[in-house]
Image (cartoon, rainbow, N blue to C red; front, side, top):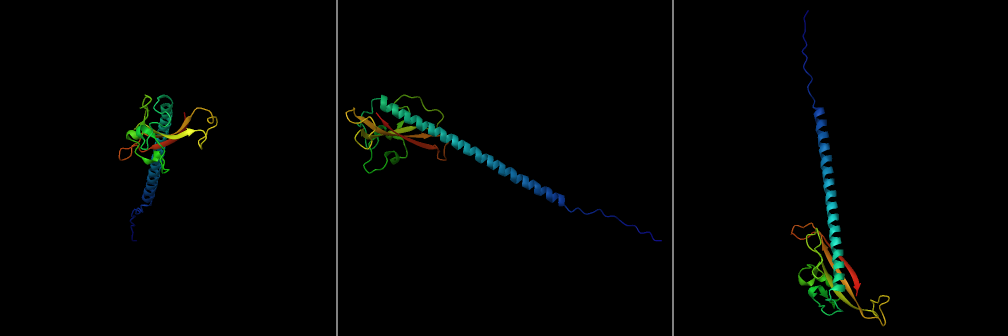
Amino acid sequence: MRHSTTTHHPKRQEGFSLVVAMLFLLLISLLSVAAIRGVTMQERMAGNTQDWNLAFQAAEAALRDAETDIRTTGRVLGIEGFTANCGDGLCLPSTDGTSVWKADDSWQGNNSVTYGAMTATTAFPGVNRQPRYKIEALGKVGASSLAISGYGGGSPAHYAYRVTAVGFGNILDSAGNPATKVFTQSVFTN
């Protein structure tokens, strides 16, 4: 009798579990990257919203500062001192119908007033650039299209002014300018 010996060869590895593990690792990595991008986007949106709110509050503060300027400083009496080029932030309405507050996008120099410059109000905190305003003389209130109840007839002359203010946020763009600008406007009578 012949004895036959059988040799047992170990079963060859197929690598199936390695492929499955690599696919799971890839899937987990993709989910992690997507979650990080989502969190980063939400953080940016929250920062931009906060910057817009700061700029809005600064613009509203500039409106109140301009109204204080009109009421108390004595430099705004009727329409004397107002010019077509907005000297010292006092503007006459344009003759061609364009808004004077849109005519100069820079809002620098003496064509607008820095917050607190005329009223000695302390600087607005937390912004990259202080808010500014322009005062546009609209004319006498009374028997015109600007008539306001109670200001007609024998009453003393009241003047209407359009106050436009711009507030800046704290975030800077790549050129070093405030990335957020908010404009507010009101009509004020004195």
